[in-house]
Length: 188
Image (cartoon, rainbow, N blue to C red; front, side, top):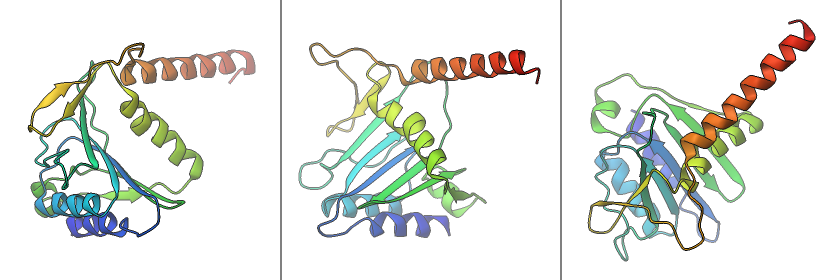
């Protein structure tokens, strides 16, 4: 059962004296077992960042309980469906892509997959483009606060507006131009 596996990965990040972190991107978080595991990990000191586009039943930033869990939603020009799960225990990183959101129906009543990304270069690209980019977004980001409501992220004085979707679109357009340039000059 996928829910048990995800729960096991979350609980494995609880290590005394070792820096640990979870960053996960998905469309929805409603699975009670996973939510409880995230809350336990946060209570034990694990820093957790969740990028959840839609429904999120986890009570974020509750003092003494989930204050180490930050939930944000990116509502931009494009509707994204990436599911990326990052677990760090000290220097050990595990990165997974998945077909499943962390929802009861996905975990219990569907055939869903999660697979590890093992290549270090590909891991870094996914971390940079799918996780870091959205954690840096100040233009389309909404934060789930202690009151249970999403609030538009406000820029700090002197802070520049950053759109993860625009940055990624620009990155991929420049890569596409490089490929076309290479093909024209190499005759490929």
